[in-house]
Length: 435
Ligand code: ASP
Image (cartoon, rainbow, N blue to C red; front, side, top):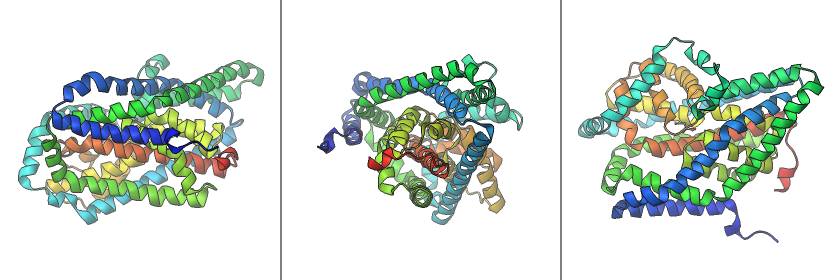
């Protein structure tokens, strides 16, 4: 007999999310921020930490086995090349959608000058902190991102989730070396990582049982931290920046429908309905954690079990995607850069906008898969086209909300590309069709 709807995990998570939202709004209106911070937020933190806890070992185990199971270097370079090409291609499409929308809709024109000054004054301190971070990143030479990919110490790299790209590097390298040594020598290590992989996937299943509560707490905490005890302020902020938010959201939705939708329909045998069913829990976790890194374990589990992507493909394509493929972030950065330019009265010509595309593709590769990383990289983009970086003060107030939404697009992109790559390689298993 079919399970009743309320027993299905994604409905429970949706319920958690909606209740968290309602609770957050009531808490902000009633001045319960402290109570929420003391008694509700910790449950969200625990959920988030549980996901982050398994992110590094998951990337390591799944990539090492993923690469090593590709059986030969030719297959690895074919799948690797295809994956990276699609990742970059979809990011460029996302950026173009963002740029077209922001130029056509001109959200910057609707922000009154006094609101601009107020926003700049309110968020200047936070903006300076962000700029200092980005300045450190930009100060180093042009090849710095490449240098940063290579860890000097694997344990140090593994000790910080922001260094995921270094773990990806190490894991792919180790996987390749495993392919090159005699099979009987490779076997023990492969068996070890294989078993670690299974343990972690089981841990994901267990953690996801608490997702409805975790998502509830994360939502309630996010709302009260944004709004404090004064709901009026956030409403005023949304009033001023609402049009900008709408442009970003519209871009994200269009990209998901047009780009991912057509990839799903034309390049995979799966239906849109199957994609939606498989990815709803993934998107909800991404929305409430604002971190594609934290969502990765859930993405892998759902893509394999519901869409039938083979472990071989998913364990290579998804960890790579979570770290380098951020279409939502890129789209948001393009819109934000042009929006800030519009507000401060600067005109960005075609070559400046092409510079945005180029820098944003690189920036989205370098953006860590954690909350708020996108706005730090935005500073680098702003500097590349001569827009004052202090302008991020204008958009900081609504950044968390947009972060949640762009992370949804980021993880949806990873999952779609994984399915497309699997379909093109004949690596889609039948199990999912029955699901
Ligand atoms: N939070 C985003 C992610 O993890 C990155 C960002 O845009 O800030 O995918």
